[in-house]
Amino acid sequence: MTAPRDVEAPGGEGPGSPTFARQLAETRTAERRLVWKELAAVALVVAFAVARQLWLA
Amino acid sequence: MDPLTAVLTGLALLGALPLAVGVYQFALVGAHRFRNHYREVGDALPRTAVLIPAWNEGAVLATTVRHLLDLDYPAERLRVYVVDDASTDGTPALLAELAGRHPGRVVHLRRDHGGEGKAATLNHGLRRLLADDWMEATLVMDADVVYEPDALRKMTRHLADPRVGAVTAYIKEGSRPGTSINRFVAYEYVHAQAAARRAQDVLGTVACLAGGAQLHARANLEALGGRLVTDTLAEDTVTTFITQMGGRRVVFEPDAVAWAEEPATVDALWRQRLRWARGNLDVTRRFRHVWFRPGQGHGLGGVSFGLFWFATLLLPVFMVVSSAALVALWVRDFEESQEVFRRLWIVTALAWVFITAFALLLDPATARRTWRQALAFPGVMSLAFIVAACAPRPAVAVRDGLTDLVGIDLTSGHVRAVMLVAYVWVAGCLLVGWLARAVDRRGAGRLARVIVYVGGFGPLLCSITVDAYLKEARHAQQRWEKTEKSGAVAIRS
Image 1: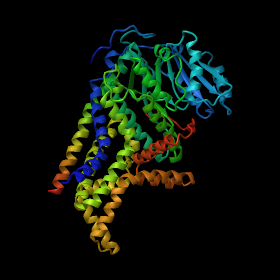
Image 2 (image 1 turned 60 degrees about the vertical axis):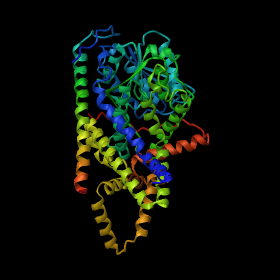
Image 3 (image 1 turned 90 degrees about the horizontal axis):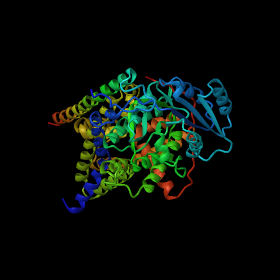
Image 4 (image 1 turned 90 degrees about the vertical axis):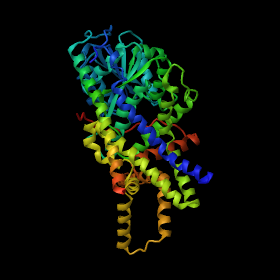
């Protein structure tokens, strides 16, 4: 995971406060899952297309 | 194939173009894992003023303000300003009570002469907020929107990047218990927000800061002149465009969730979406020099962004053109028309499977609540076409079984007539939206919802877009019609 940028944030608790770090880690985990979800949807389309071809064959 | 048949075939297949753009949009969603703003975030907790325009919102405001005060955000850095737009219900008394109970944290701003619309109400509040230097960021929201406790903090982290002008959140439909229309909207928001705004974020250009969740950096508000545009029904979209044209970035934060109460009936949905659709037509005209002109220093002129925008705006046009071309083919070459129709629906089926599966996976909590509406989104009739195109043998068996049952001897004339009905349906389903609305307005809400299942929620939205075309063509009066709220919204996570 990429460390958050060390910025002068208005009112912040400083770079990497526990809440900020936890929330960012959770978000990144959710975003990582996007790729697998997309691949699952593509796999379903392929399965659908193959099933249709087999049915028609 | 003669040239005219080739042209008609192309026009008929054009009906699949918006779906192809939809597939492209969903395909970009996965890329959000790699192209996002999370490398630039920081632990920013700016002094934030929450700005709520309110006209007769007594039923919902107490819940909304309570959730805001319970946000996981430093209390001394958060103030709630409610601009009471000359309410005539219990709103002023409620706000006086809330302000008395939370001095300094809840502020009641009263307009004695209201009715000028949401943007004018917000501008009243913005003048107050910009008059001193306490406010570092402003969250513009609606009176019925309930934020999850961590939502604001997840939004403000993007303001650590000074290039960001505004951030928007993922609005979810949260009516409890809600009607099937609420659940259709909940599923639609997975498309329109969780998916579409992620895709826009990948392109670096967001189409609209949700009206219920617009977090603006102070610098952005100042650059906007300290006020929102008032002569439009789409002040949120216009603000989004002007922000980005000014070189400031707009970010979508999918992990910040806010819950809103959306229309529960066809008629209420129609009025809300008509306002949105007319607003979008206004935006299309207002920014006519922007579309499909890359290299202007912002992404609004990008080809992909333009495709996303116009595929939605012109969807009814594609449907009508496709339907008309199929009917013309039916006249010229019936066999060819059948083949084109089959191809159109196979493409539609593949796109529908991908988009629906991905949407359901994208937001599993919403999927559990709305999977029936997800399946019925195109309408039961269109689903029948999908099945017939993808599995012709079982479809023919069912057809033959039915005709045997009722004792009809199926002739080629019958088949031609049925196919003509199917071709007309590609655009004719738009009329079903009108029928559903007419039935709903006569008090038969349950029947109206059944009609939506048959005709499809997607086609219903297209019907509303057509109504917007007609009203714009007639220069019909634009009115700000408030969507009625009952206060039945709840965080569902």
